[in-house]
Structures are given as structure tokens and as C-alpha cells.
Image (cartoon, rainbow, N blue to C red; front, side, top):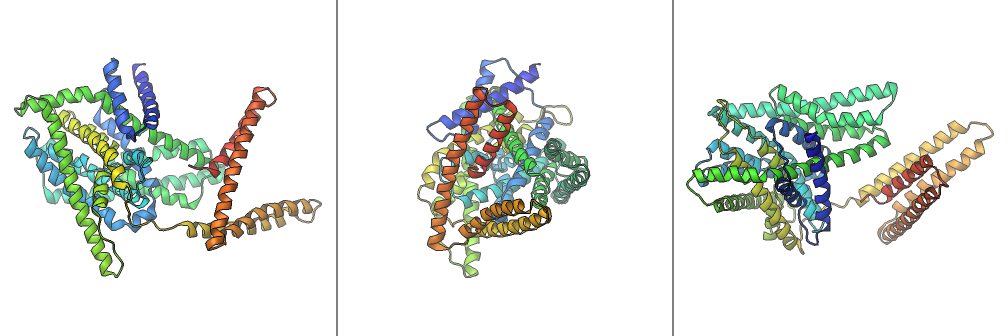
Length: 546
């Protein structure tokens, strides 16, 4: 009963902290509010959560990484692939080496292997945390796509590096050639297993659906189980479960192109996964806040072992590590962008002068978040001989401190840096979208004409089918006409479309208000009310997806 209560309180804290973050007059990152609520829960109640590292890692990371791989825009990933790969792999190795040696020098009580493990979990960035700031600050879309691509790949590379560092701490030995060979095996094997699990699940689902039809609830549940299946299968074969979860997500995005799922399944599944992402990200930060007093106490003990008896040294360490991370990231981003611009100039493309504000914004936007926290909390509790894992509490505290400071720095610095910042623009997709809508409308008209001919036959209902078909096709012909215009006519058509959408939204809200009024007066039954409100809700979602 106590475990159930803890879970419910944590989820309630996620909901309340989200509301508080939205109500705040200044753009406070939601994770900071969640950490504060977790600390309040830990201080005001007798709740105590004991975290098993392996269970924590298994529970939170696979679904979050799977969803990242599933939803990341692939066209942006391929367009800026060179920059993303340089940030996601080169910067991770640069960070692990630079910060690892720096932390070991700064805190001699932390063994080098543990310092490398800490540096590895600090290397992944978290665009979700930055998105909470971006919602109130104009972060350019292309920069966000680069950060999302970087995050997807550096989550995996950073956590894989952490696993190697932890193995070195547990065994006391490290061989670079052996580590490189093992890395290739765990990386390639992990991705292959993830793709294979998704492929097998999709094929099995298609075979079953073809025989007995699709059951929405079970299909959504299967999608929730896929990342855990990929992760566990890969770990069982000593491959990377992290990369398996990412590979499964990417494979799922391509499997979706077949369009095999029912519309109702896609709509409901999207809502379920949004809820899972919201809850899991939030609970991670609330748990950090709840654990914070014990983490601080353990970290202070390790600091005293170094000869510094003043706990203020903990703050010094956090600030120093943040400065080191920012300096390394700024340097790497500068080199990477200079190299990218150099290659573009050699191809004859026009290149713009590199602005220091772009460098600073990209540096600050690399805030740390849920993956860093989940990774550091998965550090083992004990070594193989049963002794405590060295400096574990200090590593967790430093990671938590880096998360808090990096989020605060992004919240304060990004609005200033983004003001009037010019970045290479996103490609305009309006023409591409218009062409797709015209092609789809043409296909729809042909399908309606064919179906109308087959369904009507020579019977008495032929005129009814002809009438109905004409009405349906008129909608699509109007769409083709509106999307076929160019220049000034196109702008006018889009403006008219926006006005029509606004009026339709007004009408739908009036419909729904009337349905509820009739239901309150007992003039409409509950079943009919649910159907009518659902129809209005779906139409409103279509017209106003944001």
C-alpha cells in the first residue's frame, strides 16, 4: 500500500509542478519546478524511495529513448547529419575525456573510472528540457532539430561510454582495443536487435490483424512493450539495450509509413505515448528532488574525505564542472561549424559569417536532463567484492547540480541570445505540403468515382449515389483549387482558409456547448452525448492541432 501511495504522490507532484511552471510569469524550466516539488515531498513527509539502479534504468530509459527515435524528424536528421554526428559522437568522446580527467584532478577522492562514468552521463543533452523554455522563447526550428538529433544519438553514445567506465570501475581493468571491439559488437548488435524486434512485431501484428481485425487497445499495449522487449533481448545477448531501444523507435517510424494501423489506433496511441513521456520525464525529476537531501549528505561526506570540511565546496565543484562542460561544448561547436562552413564554401555555396551568439546559444541549449539523471542513478550500489561503489553519492549530486545549473543558465541566457538572432532558415515545406494535398485530393476523387460506380450499379439508388459522390468530390475539388494558386492568389487563399478555420472552431465550440446544455436538461442521453462530443473534439483537433 505504501508503494502505491508513493507512486500516486509522485504523479500528483508531476501534474501540480507542470501547472506551476505554466503559471510562472518567467520561463522557468519545468524540470526545476519538479525537482523543487520532489524536495518538498522529501522534507515534508516520511516517504523514502529506495532506487534499485538496474530497475530504474530498465523502467525509465527504454520507453523515452524509443519515443525519441520514433518521433524525431528524419529529414532534418539527414539534412544536418554531419553537424549532428560531430556533436553526438565527437563531442561525447571529447567531453568524456576532458571532463573525466578534469573531475579526477578536481576531486582526487573520485577514482578516474568513476570520473569518466560521471563525464559520460553528463554528455547527453536534453531537448525536452530546452523545449519548455523554447515554448516562451523563439528558438529557431533548425537549431531545435539539430539539438533533437544530437540528443537522440548522444543519449546512446554517452550511456554506452558510461557502461564501459562502470565496467572498468568494477573490474579495475580497461583495454582500449578490447573496448573498441566490444563497442562495435554492442552498438551494431543493439541496433540490429532493436530493428529486428520492431520488424517482427509489425509483421506479426499485420498477420493477426489481417485474419481477425485490429484491436486498438492491444496494439497500443504492444507498442508500449516493444522498447522493453528490445532492451531486454539486447542485454541478454550482451549488446546495448540503449541502442536497441533507439533502433526499435527509428524502425517503428519507418514501419508506420505502411499506414497499416487504423486511424483510431494512431490517434489514441499518440495520446498514450504523450502521457507516458510526460509522466516518466516528470517522475524522474521528482524522484531526484526526493532523493536530494540524502544525496547531499553522502556527497558532503565524500568531500570531507578530500580534506575540505566546508560543504560550500560542493557548489564550487558543480560550478567548475559546468564551466568545463560549457567551454568544451563551445570549443567543439566552434570547430564543427567552422569545418561545416569551410566544406560548404568549397562546394561553391554562399556562407554567412559565424556569429558568436549562435555559438553561445548552441552551447547553452545543450542543457542536461532526464537521461543524465537516469544514467547517474543507475550507477551500481556496490563493487564486486561487496564494498560500496566509490563516490556514488557525490557523482549523483554533481550530476544533479549540473542539471539544475545548466537548465537555469538556459532559462536566463537563451531569451537574451535568441533576440534578433538570424540562423540559416528551415526549408519551406508549404509547397511540398500543397503538392501532397493536391495529389491526395486527386486520388480521393478517383477513389470516390470508382466506389460510386461500383456501389450504385443500375439500381434505383443510383441518383442518390451520384448526388452523394458529387458532394464529396466537390470538397476535394475545392481543396485542389485552393492549393493550386500561386503568389498573391495563394496568400489570399491561405488567408481565407485561416478565416474559415477560425469560424469552424467557433461553430464547433458552440455545438459542444449546446450538447452539454441539452444533456444537463436531460434532453440528450449519455451515450449520444459521448458520441457527439467525441465527433466535435476530433474535428476541433483536426482544425487546431496545437
